[in-house]
Image (cartoon, rainbow, N blue to C red):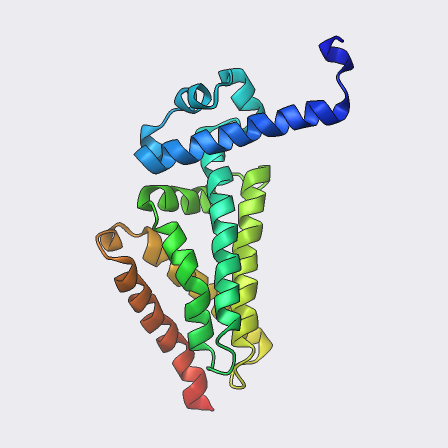
Length: 207
């Protein structure tokens, strides 16, 4: 049977298998060397695909990084939301801190990759599909923080949405700024927690 007559199911399975090999190769190489020291040719070689085939799935190295990091980011948000739901009744600070812990750890697992990922989401083309998916995840994180803040009787819905944007900005700066790169995850998380506490304090004082 000629290639043009392959059943759709088989063709799609082949495409999926190639995508998984590319993702695995990119994930391993980025983890081993960091995004700046990896080439698309190296990824194609490890995935055992032609460079032209790789470009059918992602046209740039940045897109490959976003593909890989999106999966990690999504898992971190899921883990954070589960942890936050286990702290019901502990005010706003504890649930928010529980939510962001796995997110911060994910972004700092390999600091260069995490910084580049966030940079690409913020400054890259927002209509590119993988960036759209990453931005949707960032929105999900922000919505999760908003939902946790609305559980606090001293914070209304409008303020909760604004505060969530402030908190995500704090996370972004704390995980990307060069001056903080030498810090441990625990030090960064403690600093973020202090900043969140100071951000929420005026609402409690007013109450």
